[in-house]
Amino acid sequence: GKDGYRHYMEKELHEHPVVIGQTLQRMIDPVTRQVVLPTLSFDLATLPRAVITACGSAFYAGLIGRYWLEAEARLPVDIDVASELRYRNPPLTEGGLGLLISQSGETADTLAALRGLRSAGQHVVSVLNVEASTMGRESDAVLGMVAGPEISVASTKAFTAQLAVLASLTIAIAQARGVLSPARQQHLTASLLDLPSRAAEVFVQGDAIRAMAAIIAEARDVLYLGRGICFPVALEGALKLKEISYIHAEAYAAGEMKHGPISLIDRTVPIVVIAPSNILFDKTLSNLQEARARGGRILVFTDAQGAARLKDLAEAIVVLPTVDAFVAPILYTIPVQILAYEVALLKGTDVDQPRNLAKSVTVE
Ligand code: F6R
Image (tube, rainbow, N blue to C red; front, side, top):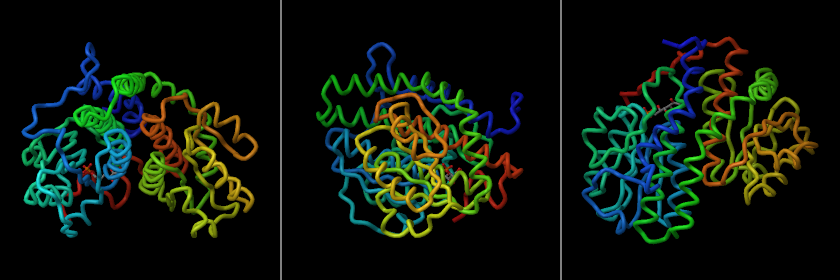
Protein backbone atom coordinates (compact mmCIF):
# COMPACT_ATOMS: atom_id res chain seq x y z
CA GLY A 1 0.00 0.00 0.00
CA LYS A 2 0.86 3.67 0.04
CA ASP A 3 1.67 3.72 3.78
CA GLY A 4 -0.38 6.89 4.30
CA TYR A 5 1.18 8.78 1.41
CA ARG A 6 -1.12 10.34 -1.20
CA HIS A 7 0.52 8.58 -4.11
CA TYR A 8 3.01 5.80 -4.71
CA MET A 9 5.26 8.44 -6.20
CA GLU A 10 5.28 10.39 -2.93
CA LYS A 11 6.03 7.21 -0.98
CA GLU A 12 8.81 6.24 -3.36
CA LEU A 13 10.35 9.72 -3.23
CA HIS A 14 10.57 9.36 0.54
CA GLU A 15 12.34 6.03 0.09
CA HIS A 16 15.36 7.62 -1.61
CA PRO A 17 17.58 7.77 1.51
CA VAL A 18 16.85 4.17 2.51
CA VAL A 19 17.22 2.83 -1.02
CA ILE A 20 20.54 4.59 -1.55
CA GLY A 21 21.74 3.12 1.76
CA GLN A 22 20.57 -0.40 0.94
CA THR A 23 22.13 -0.33 -2.51
CA LEU A 24 25.44 0.90 -1.13
CA GLN A 25 25.33 -1.80 1.53
CA ARG A 26 25.12 -4.35 -1.26
CA MET A 27 28.00 -2.74 -3.20
CA ILE A 28 30.44 -1.68 -0.46
CA ASP A 29 31.81 -3.91 2.32
CA PRO A 30 31.07 -2.03 5.57
CA VAL A 31 34.30 -3.15 7.22
CA THR A 32 36.90 -2.88 4.46
CA ARG A 33 34.98 -0.12 2.62
CA GLN A 34 35.96 -1.81 -0.63
CA VAL A 35 33.51 -2.24 -3.50
CA VAL A 36 32.39 -5.85 -3.79
CA LEU A 37 31.19 -7.06 -7.19
CA PRO A 38 29.76 -10.45 -8.12
CA THR A 39 32.33 -12.82 -9.65
CA LEU A 40 32.91 -11.72 -13.22
CA SER A 41 33.93 -13.86 -16.19
CA PHE A 42 36.26 -11.10 -17.42
CA ASP A 43 38.92 -8.77 -16.08
CA LEU A 44 37.93 -5.18 -15.28
CA ALA A 45 41.56 -4.10 -15.57
CA THR A 46 41.83 -4.77 -19.30
CA LEU A 47 38.51 -3.47 -20.61
CA PRO A 48 39.29 -1.40 -23.71
CA ARG A 49 36.15 0.72 -23.38
CA ALA A 50 32.49 0.72 -22.37
CA VAL A 51 29.22 1.22 -24.21
CA ILE A 52 26.33 2.31 -22.01
CA THR A 53 22.73 2.10 -23.13
CA ALA A 54 19.25 2.47 -21.64
CA CYS A 55 15.97 4.33 -22.19
CA GLY A 56 14.39 7.33 -20.51
CA SER A 57 15.46 8.06 -16.95
CA ALA A 58 17.77 5.05 -16.94
CA PHE A 59 19.60 6.62 -19.90
CA TYR A 60 20.13 9.82 -17.90
CA ALA A 61 21.61 7.73 -15.08
CA GLY A 62 23.91 6.30 -17.75
CA LEU A 63 25.00 9.81 -18.79
CA ILE A 64 26.08 10.45 -15.19
CA GLY A 65 27.84 7.07 -15.23
CA ARG A 66 29.77 8.21 -18.29
CA TYR A 67 31.10 11.26 -16.45
CA TRP A 68 32.23 9.09 -13.54
CA LEU A 69 33.83 6.36 -15.67
CA GLU A 70 35.67 8.89 -17.81
CA ALA A 71 36.79 11.18 -15.02
CA GLU A 72 37.62 8.68 -12.27
CA ALA A 73 38.31 5.39 -14.11
CA ARG A 74 39.74 7.01 -17.27
CA LEU A 75 37.71 4.51 -19.30
CA PRO A 76 36.55 5.60 -22.79
CA VAL A 77 32.75 5.50 -22.90
CA ASP A 78 30.21 5.61 -25.71
CA ILE A 79 26.58 6.09 -24.74
CA ASP A 80 23.31 6.23 -26.61
CA VAL A 81 19.63 5.58 -26.04
CA ALA A 82 18.88 1.93 -26.74
CA SER A 83 16.38 2.70 -29.51
CA GLU A 84 19.23 4.35 -31.44
CA LEU A 85 22.11 2.11 -30.43
CA ARG A 86 20.31 -1.03 -31.57
CA TYR A 87 20.25 0.25 -35.16
CA ARG A 88 23.59 2.09 -35.22
CA ASN A 89 25.86 -0.91 -35.67
CA PRO A 90 28.90 0.89 -34.23
CA PRO A 91 32.33 -0.71 -34.66
CA LEU A 92 33.21 -2.29 -31.29
CA THR A 93 36.42 -3.86 -30.04
CA GLU A 94 35.81 -7.42 -28.78
CA GLY A 95 35.94 -7.71 -25.02
CA GLY A 96 34.55 -4.27 -24.22
CA LEU A 97 31.99 -3.62 -21.51
CA GLY A 98 28.33 -3.44 -22.55
CA LEU A 99 26.57 -1.72 -19.67
CA LEU A 100 22.77 -1.81 -19.61
CA ILE A 101 20.61 0.06 -17.13
CA SER A 102 16.96 -0.83 -16.56
CA GLN A 103 14.56 -0.74 -13.64
CA SER A 104 12.27 -3.41 -15.11
CA GLY A 105 14.79 -5.52 -17.02
CA GLU A 106 12.15 -5.89 -19.74
CA THR A 107 12.34 -2.70 -21.86
CA ALA A 108 12.20 -3.88 -25.48
CA ASP A 109 14.79 -1.51 -26.94
CA THR A 110 17.26 -2.03 -24.09
CA LEU A 111 16.89 -5.80 -24.44
CA ALA A 112 17.48 -5.61 -28.20
CA ALA A 113 20.57 -3.45 -27.59
CA LEU A 114 21.78 -6.00 -25.01
CA ARG A 115 21.52 -8.78 -27.60
CA GLY A 116 23.34 -6.65 -30.17
CA LEU A 117 26.17 -5.88 -27.75
CA ARG A 118 26.46 -9.54 -26.82
CA SER A 119 26.72 -10.64 -30.45
CA ALA A 120 29.37 -7.93 -30.97
CA GLY A 121 31.50 -9.68 -28.34
CA GLN A 122 30.92 -7.31 -25.44
CA HIS A 123 30.82 -8.43 -21.80
CA VAL A 124 27.26 -7.62 -20.84
CA VAL A 125 26.67 -6.21 -17.36
CA SER A 126 23.17 -5.06 -16.44
CA VAL A 127 22.18 -2.71 -13.66
CA LEU A 128 18.68 -3.92 -12.80
CA ASN A 129 16.03 -3.51 -10.16
CA VAL A 130 14.10 -6.62 -11.25
CA GLU A 131 16.97 -9.10 -11.33
CA ALA A 132 14.71 -12.04 -12.26
CA SER A 133 13.96 -10.49 -15.66
CA THR A 134 14.77 -11.19 -19.30
CA MET A 135 17.79 -8.86 -19.17
CA GLY A 136 18.90 -10.51 -15.95
CA ARG A 137 18.87 -13.92 -17.61
CA GLU A 138 20.72 -12.74 -20.73
CA SER A 139 23.52 -10.82 -18.98
CA ASP A 140 27.01 -12.03 -18.06
CA ALA A 141 26.59 -10.29 -14.72
CA VAL A 142 23.82 -8.42 -12.92
CA LEU A 143 24.40 -5.55 -10.52
CA GLY A 144 21.22 -5.29 -8.50
CA MET A 145 19.88 -1.97 -7.35
CA VAL A 146 18.11 -2.58 -4.09
CA ALA A 147 15.21 -0.22 -4.73
CA GLY A 148 12.28 -2.52 -3.96
CA PRO A 149 9.15 -2.50 -6.15
CA GLU A 150 8.57 0.79 -7.96
CA ILE A 151 4.83 1.22 -8.57
CA SER A 152 4.63 4.83 -9.74
CA VAL A 153 4.97 4.96 -13.53
CA ALA A 154 7.43 7.84 -13.21
CA SER A 155 10.72 6.42 -11.98
CA THR A 156 12.13 7.95 -8.81
CA LYS A 157 14.05 5.81 -6.32
CA ALA A 158 15.29 3.45 -9.04
CA PHE A 159 17.23 6.38 -10.51
CA THR A 160 19.26 7.11 -7.38
CA ALA A 161 19.75 3.38 -6.82
CA GLN A 162 21.11 3.08 -10.38
CA LEU A 163 23.50 5.92 -9.61
CA ALA A 164 24.65 4.29 -6.38
CA VAL A 165 25.50 1.15 -8.38
CA LEU A 166 27.23 3.07 -11.17
CA ALA A 167 29.30 5.13 -8.72
CA SER A 168 30.41 1.97 -6.92
CA LEU A 169 31.21 0.24 -10.21
CA THR A 170 33.27 3.27 -11.22
CA ILE A 171 35.37 2.93 -8.07
CA ALA A 172 35.89 -0.79 -8.75
CA ILE A 173 36.93 -0.22 -12.38
CA ALA A 174 39.17 2.71 -11.47
CA GLN A 175 40.92 0.58 -8.85
CA ALA A 176 41.30 -2.35 -11.24
CA ARG A 177 42.83 -0.02 -13.83
CA GLY A 178 45.24 1.34 -11.22
CA VAL A 179 44.17 4.95 -11.72
CA LEU A 180 42.61 5.59 -8.30
CA SER A 181 44.85 6.49 -5.37
CA PRO A 182 43.90 4.93 -2.03
CA ALA A 183 43.21 8.42 -0.68
CA ARG A 184 40.87 9.24 -3.57
CA GLN A 185 39.19 5.84 -3.23
CA GLN A 186 38.54 6.48 0.46
CA HIS A 187 37.30 9.97 -0.28
CA LEU A 188 34.83 8.81 -2.95
CA THR A 189 33.60 5.91 -0.83
CA ALA A 190 33.12 8.17 2.19
CA SER A 191 31.14 10.67 0.12
CA LEU A 192 28.85 7.83 -1.03
CA LEU A 193 28.35 6.38 2.45
CA ASP A 194 27.50 9.86 3.72
CA LEU A 195 24.70 10.23 1.17
CA PRO A 196 21.74 8.55 2.92
CA SER A 197 21.95 11.11 5.75
CA ARG A 198 22.34 14.03 3.36
CA ALA A 199 19.44 12.71 1.24
CA ALA A 200 17.20 12.63 4.32
CA GLU A 201 17.96 16.34 4.87
CA VAL A 202 16.47 17.21 1.46
CA PHE A 203 12.98 16.71 2.84
CA VAL A 204 13.21 19.71 5.18
CA GLN A 205 13.18 21.86 2.02
CA GLY A 206 9.54 21.06 1.26
CA ASP A 207 8.33 24.67 1.55
CA ALA A 208 11.07 26.02 -0.72
CA ILE A 209 10.33 23.34 -3.31
CA ARG A 210 6.60 24.11 -3.16
CA ALA A 211 7.31 27.83 -3.66
CA MET A 212 9.17 26.89 -6.83
CA ALA A 213 6.37 24.54 -7.88
CA ALA A 214 3.83 27.37 -7.63
CA ILE A 215 5.80 29.38 -10.21
CA ILE A 216 6.22 26.43 -12.55
CA ALA A 217 2.58 25.36 -12.37
CA GLU A 218 1.63 28.67 -14.06
CA ALA A 219 4.02 28.16 -16.97
CA ARG A 220 3.48 26.57 -20.36
CA ASP A 221 7.18 25.98 -21.02
CA VAL A 222 10.08 25.50 -18.63
CA LEU A 223 13.82 25.37 -19.25
CA TYR A 224 16.11 23.19 -17.14
CA LEU A 225 19.82 23.97 -17.12
CA GLY A 226 22.84 22.16 -15.76
CA ARG A 227 26.50 21.75 -16.59
CA GLY A 228 28.81 18.79 -16.56
CA ILE A 229 27.65 16.00 -14.32
CA CYS A 230 24.54 18.01 -13.39
CA PHE A 231 23.31 18.33 -17.00
CA PRO A 232 21.75 14.83 -16.84
CA VAL A 233 20.00 15.89 -13.62
CA ALA A 234 18.43 18.73 -15.62
CA LEU A 235 17.36 16.19 -18.26
CA GLU A 236 15.79 14.03 -15.56
CA GLY A 237 13.98 17.04 -14.07
CA ALA A 238 12.55 18.07 -17.43
CA LEU A 239 11.43 14.52 -18.27
CA LYS A 240 9.73 14.06 -14.91
CA LEU A 241 7.92 17.40 -15.22
CA LYS A 242 6.68 16.51 -18.73
CA GLU A 243 5.56 13.05 -17.67
CA ILE A 244 3.42 13.88 -14.69
CA SER A 245 2.42 17.56 -14.98
CA TYR A 246 2.11 17.72 -18.81
CA ILE A 247 4.03 20.99 -18.82
CA HIS A 248 6.51 21.26 -21.68
CA ALA A 249 10.07 21.30 -20.41
CA GLU A 250 13.44 21.18 -22.13
CA ALA A 251 16.81 20.59 -20.57
CA TYR A 252 19.94 22.19 -21.96
CA ALA A 253 23.58 22.07 -21.06
CA ALA A 254 23.91 25.61 -19.70
CA GLY A 255 26.67 26.46 -22.16
CA GLU A 256 24.34 25.74 -25.08
CA MET A 257 21.93 28.53 -24.08
CA LYS A 258 23.50 31.15 -26.27
CA HIS A 259 23.43 28.78 -29.25
CA GLY A 260 19.66 28.95 -29.54
CA PRO A 261 17.36 28.51 -26.57
CA ILE A 262 18.17 31.94 -25.15
CA SER A 263 15.78 33.30 -27.76
CA LEU A 264 12.92 31.66 -25.83
CA ILE A 265 13.61 33.51 -22.61
CA ASP A 266 11.10 35.96 -21.23
CA ARG A 267 9.09 36.23 -18.00
CA THR A 268 6.79 33.40 -19.00
CA VAL A 269 9.50 30.72 -19.26
CA PRO A 270 10.89 29.84 -15.81
CA ILE A 271 14.46 28.52 -15.78
CA VAL A 272 15.25 25.74 -13.30
CA VAL A 273 18.97 25.50 -12.63
CA ILE A 274 20.93 22.63 -11.08
CA ALA A 275 23.97 24.43 -9.70
CA PRO A 276 25.95 22.97 -6.79
CA SER A 277 29.03 25.10 -6.09
CA ASN A 278 31.51 23.02 -8.05
CA ILE A 279 34.24 23.99 -10.51
CA LEU A 280 31.64 24.88 -13.15
CA PHE A 281 29.56 27.12 -10.89
CA ASP A 282 30.99 30.40 -12.20
CA LYS A 283 30.28 29.36 -15.78
CA THR A 284 26.67 28.61 -14.91
CA LEU A 285 26.42 31.88 -13.01
CA SER A 286 27.37 33.88 -16.08
CA ASN A 287 24.77 31.98 -18.15
CA LEU A 288 22.19 32.91 -15.53
CA GLN A 289 23.17 36.59 -15.60
CA GLU A 290 22.54 36.56 -19.35
CA ALA A 291 19.18 34.89 -18.83
CA ARG A 292 18.22 37.32 -16.05
CA ALA A 293 19.12 40.30 -18.25
CA ARG A 294 16.50 39.02 -20.71
CA GLY A 295 13.79 38.86 -18.08
CA GLY A 296 14.15 35.17 -17.25
CA ARG A 297 12.88 33.98 -13.87
CA ILE A 298 15.64 31.93 -12.26
CA LEU A 299 14.83 29.07 -9.89
CA VAL A 300 17.90 27.38 -8.42
CA PHE A 301 18.91 24.20 -6.65
CA THR A 302 22.24 24.85 -4.97
CA ASP A 303 24.10 24.64 -1.64
CA ALA A 304 24.67 27.34 1.01
CA GLN A 305 27.75 28.73 -0.75
CA GLY A 306 25.94 28.87 -4.10
CA ALA A 307 22.85 30.42 -2.51
CA ALA A 308 24.91 33.29 -1.13
CA ARG A 309 26.15 34.09 -4.63
CA LEU A 310 22.78 33.71 -6.34
CA LYS A 311 20.53 35.53 -3.89
CA ASP A 312 20.18 38.68 -6.03
CA LEU A 313 19.70 36.76 -9.26
CA ALA A 314 17.32 33.99 -8.32
CA GLU A 315 13.61 34.29 -7.59
CA ALA A 316 13.53 31.00 -5.69
CA ILE A 317 16.33 28.96 -4.19
CA VAL A 318 16.29 25.47 -2.71
CA VAL A 319 19.34 25.15 -0.47
CA LEU A 320 20.70 21.61 -0.33
CA PRO A 321 23.31 20.05 1.94
CA THR A 322 26.90 20.60 0.83
CA VAL A 323 28.27 17.38 -0.62
CA ASP A 324 31.27 16.27 -2.64
CA ALA A 325 30.99 16.97 -6.38
CA PHE A 326 31.18 13.21 -7.07
CA VAL A 327 27.84 12.51 -5.39
CA ALA A 328 26.07 15.81 -6.10
CA PRO A 329 24.08 14.41 -9.06
CA ILE A 330 22.60 11.73 -6.78
CA LEU A 331 21.56 14.23 -4.11
CA TYR A 332 20.23 16.87 -6.53
CA THR A 333 18.02 14.37 -8.34
CA ILE A 334 15.82 14.04 -5.26
CA PRO A 335 14.52 17.63 -4.98
CA VAL A 336 14.25 17.89 -8.75
CA GLN A 337 11.91 14.88 -8.78
CA ILE A 338 10.00 16.25 -5.78
CA LEU A 339 9.52 19.50 -7.70
CA ALA A 340 7.81 17.62 -10.56
CA TYR A 341 5.60 15.85 -8.03
CA GLU A 342 4.58 19.12 -6.35
CA VAL A 343 3.75 20.71 -9.72
CA ALA A 344 1.64 17.68 -10.65
CA LEU A 345 -0.27 18.04 -7.37
CA LEU A 346 -1.03 21.67 -8.22
CA LYS A 347 -2.14 20.64 -11.71
CA GLY A 348 -4.33 17.85 -10.31
CA THR A 349 -3.04 15.22 -12.72
CA ASP A 350 -3.09 11.46 -12.18
CA VAL A 351 0.41 11.35 -10.69
CA ASP A 352 0.89 7.60 -10.46
CA GLN A 353 -0.73 6.79 -13.82
CA PRO A 354 0.11 9.61 -16.22
CA ARG A 355 -1.75 9.50 -19.52
CA ASN A 356 -0.27 7.52 -22.41
CA LEU A 357 2.53 6.00 -20.32
CA ALA A 358 3.19 2.42 -19.23
CA LYS A 359 5.52 1.32 -16.45
CA SER A 360 7.28 -1.21 -18.62
CA VAL A 361 7.71 -0.59 -22.34
CA THR A 362 7.94 -4.10 -23.74
CA VAL A 363 7.18 -3.20 -27.36
CA GLU A 364 9.39 -1.16 -29.62
C1 F6R B 1 10.77 7.97 -16.47
C2 F6R B 1 10.54 6.57 -16.73
C3 F6R B 1 10.99 5.97 -18.04
C4 F6R B 1 11.86 4.75 -17.78
C5 F6R B 1 12.20 4.05 -19.11
C6 F6R B 1 13.13 2.87 -18.91
O1 F6R B 1 10.19 8.37 -15.29
O2 F6R B 1 10.00 5.88 -15.91
O3 F6R B 1 11.66 6.93 -18.81
O4 F6R B 1 13.00 5.17 -17.11
O5 F6R B 1 11.01 3.60 -19.73
O6 F6R B 1 12.53 1.84 -18.17
P1 F6R B 1 13.40 0.69 -17.54
O7 F6R B 1 14.34 1.32 -16.57
O8 F6R B 1 12.43 -0.24 -16.90
O9 F6R B 1 14.17 0.03 -18.67
